[in-house]
Length: 457
Ligand code: UDX
Image 1 (cartoon, rainbow, N blue to C red):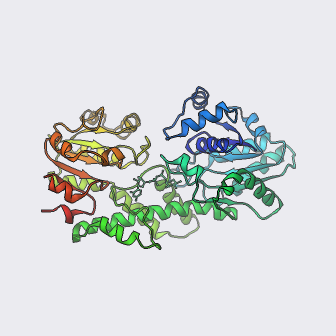
Image 2: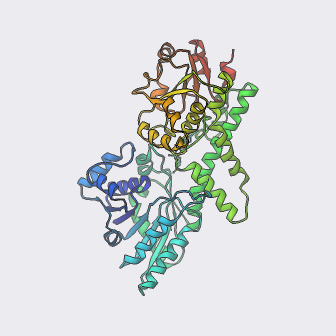
Image 3: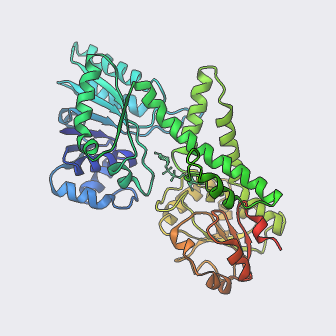
């Protein structure tokens, strides 16, 4: 099938490359000439494991191309995926200007029936706005061409996006019940035929329910994390090991084991943005989502949990202290620093006078960029901050090691070596990477999340 992907950001690029991988003829459009130049030069503008190979293979096979030519992109695809950014507005609601602009371009240039697919995470009712924008453009051209707008939300995790796309837990597709909607269903069946044949289930539903499903999924996952974080903070006080509790409850199939890891808070481009957007949507309808408001508040507090533990040990003034920091990205296998807990911690430590030396396997360039913004009001504080070339190099002379991101290489670290290199054998672990009793037996002071009962003397 001929498919156009509008937007070569994270979602668009993965979608385009993976649809080419299953044999479709894919045209990727972006307004950003720099991105298109990188892609046409054989590069990848984002860090995502395995994506470069899929892109290279399909470009070489002639099934995947990149361009800034809007008219050519509309002409190419019978199916037009809209995968442009939906950044949060000042009030937290999703900004749809790029989605609407993409829809207008389709309306301006289309010369045959098109299926438009909303792939970006967009609030309920967006398909109607996309439809109205296309209708508006067609009217201006006095055209009566048919089209159908569908919703096909993505459930990709950064760092595992290619695998998530190729082996989806489920596909959710919303379409209308009128003649165009039914025609669109047939087209979407063809788009995902190889996935269905491989046993991946498609859930067909109306458009609004599909749009809502994406938010509901992320809100549920964020709720689980904040729920466990809140319990972890109580566990520290009442002498309970939150990780034992996690296993105890996760074995109940009604609860399930995933997304119950307590830690120093969730970040990234999806959970914070989607929870806020859903809260905004509810407010627009005069409805209060009490649980989700709390989910967000708990998460904001949780980003301070490591700082609080550090202040509890050393007091509010950290001058003369040096902290080794492992992990900057909001999660492993990505260089994404959006809403990362490390940013909150670094603010607290530097503003309290501490020195911080940090290592992250891939996020250091991005960290440098975002920290310059975070400290725009006090750039001199960044003199207290530096990067090290590897995870060992941050340790010498540090009063403690602080772990913010659960990279595998940190989990596999040699604890005795950490102890030998640090000035003082103290670890603040925001991701519960180690067995507290083992750490304690090695003579290391260990502050984890919700596990104080196993580490106190
Ligand atoms: C998420 C959803 O998982 C994905 O389906 C959706 O399409 C986009 O949002 P992503 O933002 O890439 O994906 O990250 P994810 O792996 O879900 O982790 C999000 C955050 O939650 C990370 O900061 C992670 O450290 C944290 N987390 C995750 C926990 O604190 N505890 C857990 O048990 C799981």
